[in-house]
Length: 270
Image 1 (cartoon, rainbow, N blue to C red):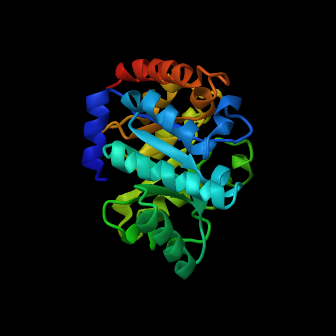
Image 2 (cartoon, helix red, strand yellow; image 1 turned 60 degrees about the vertical axis):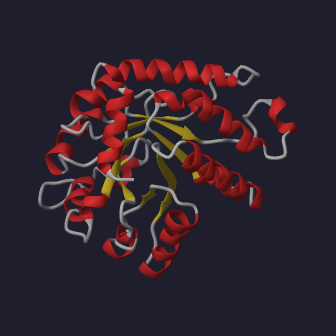
């Protein structure tokens, strides 16, 4: 998907909501567990209920890998369903890959060619040769971990460097020098809105994937205040707060109401 197509969807829906499909077999409603593929059935109903309010879905790959072959089958069914039924919605493989070049090439092939996701999250620690293989794919996007929403982010990401910058700023600056860097997006946690100003000073035009709104307590208004740009430039993710709004048979309707509520808040900024 091109950035222009993503921006058009944001304008059309007055939303930059990303729904996280962190589907845990232990947390889905009991009545779904009689289905041949309960994970896919849960995802399908969540997608049906929320698609009109969001512009992206993010599948957290760990929840599927943990189920072995059945998990990969559910993931494949989910991405195929999205691509067939909702081709205008941006898809994210939240895989957090990051390895040497030949391995990175295979990860890119798996998620961009076989599964046909629009984007993938990647860790920057091993540098450009671990990221550039993902950037070779036309109209596919690599979402680099820059400043995450977890407590441990302060262990490394905000450490001071000799030039006065911090590690996350160095990641941003360096990534701009990589081949096809215009296809980069960045993960920036909603629980750290005070950092958005410095991030936008370095990557003013890039899209930011922002987890942490909802269950993790991030503020949408604060994120928008410092993170929006001329093309909106935000994909604000909510996972547990939407998909587990109810654990009963009304789970899809409850998810719809949560997604609708966030979309209404976002409409004021679009």
